[in-house]
Structures are given as C-alpha cells and as structure tokens.
Image (cartoon, rainbow, N blue to C red; front, side):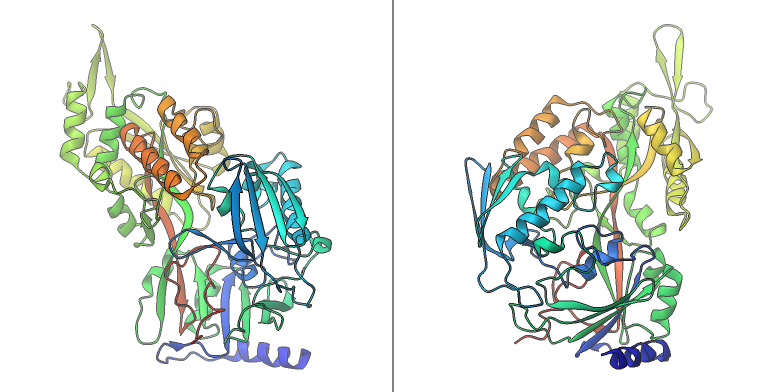
Length: 518
C-alpha cells in the first residue's frame, strides 16, 4: 500500500497543466481544499469547514437531508414520534457494519450523541462546544431500547430535531479517539496533516460500492495556492469560498458549480437607538439598499438571495420579494411621511422634535477588518453611498472583530455589518427572540417571540412550514435588521462527480458515492 501511495502522491505533484474536455469522473478524483488546523481525524469535533465534507464520505448519520431540504432516513430506516413530539423512536437498518465488519448498534448512536452533548454542556465558551453544539437544545436524553432501537427524549416537541440528528456515528469505544471507524462509502487510508488525506472504498459499505474507488484530498495553506494548483492541473477539483473563484466560468474544459453556505450577511440596526427605533426609518433604509448590486459589484455574484434569515433556495422560503425590492422613491416617501426633510439645505435630513430641537439623520456604520479580503469594507462604503442618496449621512467606522463584538454586546452602535453562521436546523430564534444571544439589535416583539414558541412546538412538517411562513411575514413587517444575502462558494472541477441538485456547504462531495450507478 505504501508503494502505491507514494506513486500516487508523486503523480499528484508532477501533473502538468492540461486542457481537456470536461468529463465524468472515472475511478479516482483529486480534490484540493483549504486546511491548516486539522491535525487528527476527529469527525465528532471537526476544526475546519471543508474537512466536514471529507468526513461525510466516511461517517454517516441517523438522518440525512435531501435535495429538497427535507429530512430523510439514512442509518435509521424509519422513525416515529409520540407524546406530542416529546419522544422520537428510531429503528436502525439491518446489516449495517463499520468498515472493519463490526455491526452498527444503537449503543454506538447513543455514545456518539452523548459525547457531543458532553462537549456542549461542559464548555461555557461557544467556540469550544463543538460543531454540533446545537444538539444540546434538541436532545434531553438518548437511550438504546435494544440493538436496533434508539429512543430520544426531545427538549422540544419539534420537527427541527430531525435536522440536528445529522451528526456522524462512530463506534461507542472510539468516540474520543482519532480516526475512528465509520459506516460510510469510504475509509481514510492515509493522512498527513497539512499535506493530504487518502480515501479508499469501504468494502463493508451497506450500499452498492462506488464507481470512484479513490479520492485523494490535497490540503493547502491558502486559497491562492489552492487556486494555483487547480489552474495548473495538480488537482481535478477545488473547493473555495474566495470571491476570486468568480472569474472561472463553466466551459469546455472546466465547470464552476455554485454551492450554498450557511453564512448569512446582515446589516444590523440598533432598534433602541434613535432614529432606528422607528420602523419607518428601518423600512426606508431597507428600501434604499440594493443588495443585488452589492452582490454583483463586491461579491461577484457569489451569493444566494435572502430577504429574511430563510434563503430563497429553501423549501421553507416564503416569497415576499416585493416587500424587499430596492425602491429609492419608496424610501424617500417613508421618511417624508415620518417628518424628515432637509431643513437647512445641507444635504442631510432633519426632523423637528418638540418646539426647539432638531434631530439630524447622522448614523455610524461599524465594519470589522478582515485579513483575507476587504469585501465587507467595500460593502460598507456602498451602503453609505446608497443611504447618502437618501440624504442619510453615514460614517463608516473600521474596527477589529473583537471591538465590533464588544460594541454590539454593549449596545454602542447604530448599524453594523455582521455575518452569522446559521445552524443546520432552520431556526433563527437566536437572532429574533427577546434577550437571545444573537439579538444584538435589541429587537423586542411579543408577536415574534410567540411565533417562535409556536414553531418549537411543531412536530410535523406542514405545521413547521406554516410557522416559518408566519415568522417571515413578521420579519417583513418589523424589519429588525436587514438580510443582505447568504454567501456562496464554488466547486471548480474538470470532472463531474455528482448529479445532486442541491450542493451545499459541509456536503461538497455528496453524490460521488452513487455517481455512475445504473
């Protein structure tokens, strides 16, 4: 095996630039990803986003999410709920084994889940609670009724729990050891940190063996090096979120496939700060910002529309695009109706307050420095110009990430550009419910809180979707903050390896295991 691996790696480094017609993958694929922090194979506690996509080829979960965004059985062949959604019972598939031939049992599912719960509960800092930390809000208890039956006592009577059960399952005895066994289509045959990962087919996989027998994953320390390797043909496929990837278009020799991320870009508005405590002012700002122009000019189109925290590509999306459409005339009318005008002719709107006071529409916009790129700074300047056309004077204040976070927590800001990594479970309550950790805008709405309380009692799909629609309607009415868009990434590839419709972050190799099947 060592001789074969050395030969494969030599070929990887020696490949010349080439230009061939885009073709279907055959029996191997060379993938390039950005990775600098992964020193051990720890699927239950991954340290980098693209490594999660690699783990997804080795480790499987109880539940998966299909092309429509709906939970479907994977290692569980079915499930039932009882006690009004408080108890969920999962039956495991028969004859599923780990890659060494050892049978998968309910005890392995329980041990994997409890490891993640312990990780989340035993760390106060959210940054050390692990990638699957939201599981702590979903699962109160988990147990094995027998070898094939898992019983979960839910923290909420909640359809959303199914999304949270997409964590990897490893053997009970290996939850805290490097490179545990998996049940997935591939095994990790070799790993050299900061250099490469080598995946080979799992001969014990419970489904039909993949056509692609080997996946070589080359690890790069910068996006620049990754893109260069792709340009010179040293990798077949590159995963990147760099806006520089926008220069690559699908053609005869290469494909550029956009994938969805969970990173929501927002303009936060302080709902307690004058004049942003006025919903008409917030609506005017929303109408004056052309998110599509920002997307095209700054992010080079590598975004996904999002009027609310639900992306436009989601099955839960409720189309209210008319409410969020760029409309400078509407913005001007909203402010005029609210009593704003340029009283002194200096190009900035004013408003008489009482008998002897005049307020001016001066706002500060926080933006934090980004060492990798300046897209947020460019975005801040575009927003300042757009609001300037509305006669709102905006000063852009550049701060560090920690300084911005401190100001948000201390309620010392007018507006701020900020991004949020949304969870696999579609629930934005942490941003919109009173007193919640991510509600930096100090938005308070009894109606919105009630809607989220209702959402978290919906344990069937239709009720869950209906509650999400009502939340989006309330968001449009109140404008607690402005959703600009979700970031998108790019898969650059010379070999087509998947036919799935919804390629998304953390699952970038999804579909390779079944590619080419008849």
